Length: 225
Image (cartoon, rainbow, N blue to C red):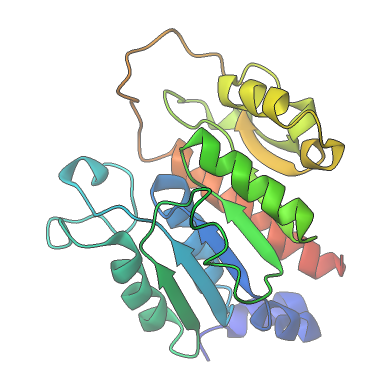
């Protein structure tokens, strides 16, 4: 069986993993590795939200980006990949840019977890507020660009972040709701120099961010939280 080795670790908790319903917002560098990890946990209900198509510049870091997939919708390629890993998985895709106008579209069912892996600040703020409003567990990724040192990656609460410009803005924008500031985030303590508008990235740190996010779910299920 494809998930036998995980069942050895989780015992009866493997059923809890299978029954999870998870929404991933953004399936690029961070979200791609998070999605891959969730698929290989045997989760049977995954919803993907990403409007973007695969570009040649994605090849250096994104799981699904190859020369043969350039130009295709990321959610479509990932759906095929998930089903190739776990044919029992129900995969729902939304090729949309999550914003105020369509934020209700994806909430036509309940979720156990939301992984916020998107880059857009406003979308992050909206999804965090919506998760708190609906009492859904959410894990958010902060900035992975221009990072090189994996030992600087941490899991903490949004309110406890430092050195991360994206987290700083989010803390300010969400300051009216203390519950939003309590959410777990993955971020890096690595200080980066000033840079151009085009964000440099590599194949290591964004993918590690995604794996850290998936690990939170795995460990919470293991502990029965």
